[in-house]
Image 1 (cartoon, one colour):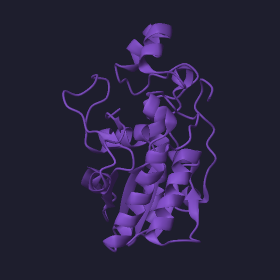
Image 2 (tube, one colour; image 1 turned 135 degrees about the vertical axis):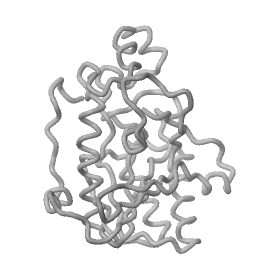
Image 3 (spheres, helix red, strand yellow; image 1 turned 45 degrees about the vertical axis):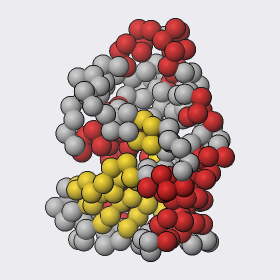
Image 4 (cartoon, rainbow, N blue to C red; image 1 turned 90 degrees about the vertical axis):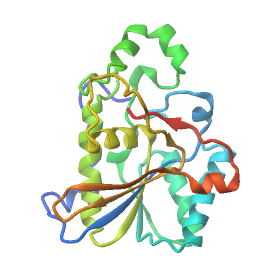
Length: 248
């Protein structure tokens, strides 16, 4: 767990070497959520704690890699959160694409939000043990920090900085970024202009395990969202509905 202050980030080289640079070519990001884990299946908050991929989660990752290879989708490099569930997913996808031996770069800044005292608990357990903290969290205030955890603003700041740096490093190329449901949700909410601090929207985008969100970093530094929540590889194999995260 992190402390109550902003986390000390391990600055990855991909962030350090691109600070302040303007993109000279467009770049494409395939933002992927990790495969299903045991705690996903049980409905438990994970955060910075980890849980192994389930057999279905392994199949989801394999299916995504094979799908991308079958359609000859260009993937020039792969980055992943340093949490094992995301890194393992990335390795399996890389193998399926045919990128054996290619390095999956660990980027600590794109790890999941720390949920502090909520981690390891189900929603019903949190409601029983920490009703006031849950009530505050559900207001979706950018600056509310779950005790011993992170605020949404802290997560947004570190993840957006990392994503922009990854895109600028991969200008003219396609980079897969394997991360977490909470990260994808917060990034999408910000990029699509969905306000924070207003509670859950009337509708929600479902961020399922191994779903792909395709994004393009334009020459002016703005982002274009090309697709959200693509799980054609799961539907084709009939793996069942992947666990989903509503937009944070």
